[in-house]
Amino acid sequence: MSLIEHLRWRYATKKFNPTKKVGAGELEILKEAIRLAATSYGLQPFKVAVIDDALLKAELRKAAYNQSQISDCSHLFVFSHFTALNPQFIDDYIQLCAEKREQDHDLLKGYGNFMKTTLGNFNEQELHNWSSKQAYIGMTNLLMACAELRIDACPIEGFEAEKFNEILDLNPMDLSACVIVSIGYRASDDPDQFMKKVRLPKSDLFI
Ligand SMILES: Cc1cc2nc3c(=O)[nH]c(=O)nc-3n(C[C@H](O)[C@H](O)[C@H](O)COP(=O)(O)O)c2cc1C
Image 1 (cartoon, helix red, strand yellow):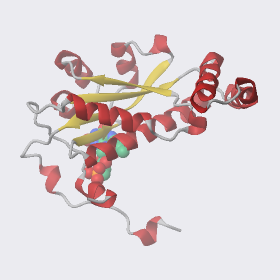
Image 2 (image 1 turned 135 degrees about the vertical axis):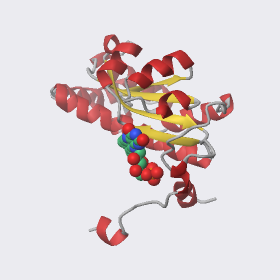
Image 3 (image 1 turned 30 degrees about the horizontal axis):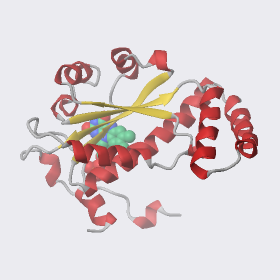
Image 4 (image 1 turned 90 degrees about the horizontal axis):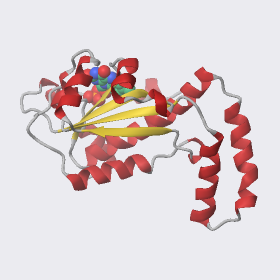
């Protein structure tokens, strides 16, 4: 199957079968797809919580306008972006680059300083915009990997980030929830699976 066929297969699942669980092996593939996402400077300024605890999902559902996908899915991926950028994080990344590529750490220091200066100039909102955009790239990789594995998924922005932050205790880690993805298997009577895709024609989308 080609990538395009996978993308045509997938849809934003509204009703999950709550009894069907995604297996541990497949979960690892999905995590790897997120890990391999391209990000600005390669910094990956986000974290992902993978939640399958029923009570926790039920609590989060209340903070997501009661959307059933939150509690009926197999696993809930909560993408949280950095709300602060500790210079140590960049130092650690440079160290990782040096180790992985067997490069001289001192040669990479200039690149680290460049990132520190550029990102250090961001105000709170700019950092929020930049780091949450990176999280969305991870989300897209997750959606594509799910489609390839024939795992259903629903990307969700309809939730109260502050409540999620509180429930998951994200703020003390300088994180804030920005987008979530419910994954699992569709209910056989989810009407959305039978709906035609609605997309702009290429002539409108491309200029
Ligand atoms: C960032 C993002 C946020 C979304 N938020 C929600 C949501 O809160 N609830 C929901 O049911 N669907 C949500 N969707 C699903 C979209 O409505 C859906 O992807 C779009 O209508 C295209 O349909 P398709 O994904 O089935 O092709 C979201 C999609 C994206 C990419």
